[in-house]
Image (cartoon, rainbow, N blue to C red):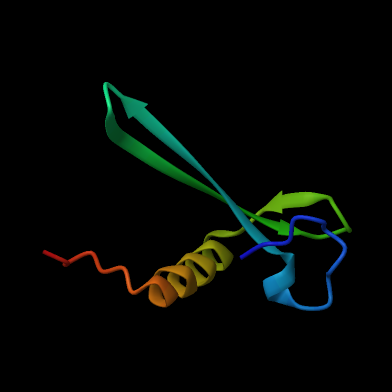
Length: 71
């Protein structure tokens, strides 16, 4: 997801992006943050609205087959 070069704004998927940050301590993953953004002016990002964020992350998690209830 996302567009590294920010020159492909002809559709919503090419304008969406997220940046993930990971916090490790003593070899353990403690936290993951996902910052979601939208390219609105060929390189100028803005933070997504809660609804936009929900739609993007839902599609990403569905495509990954990730489940909260996985054993």
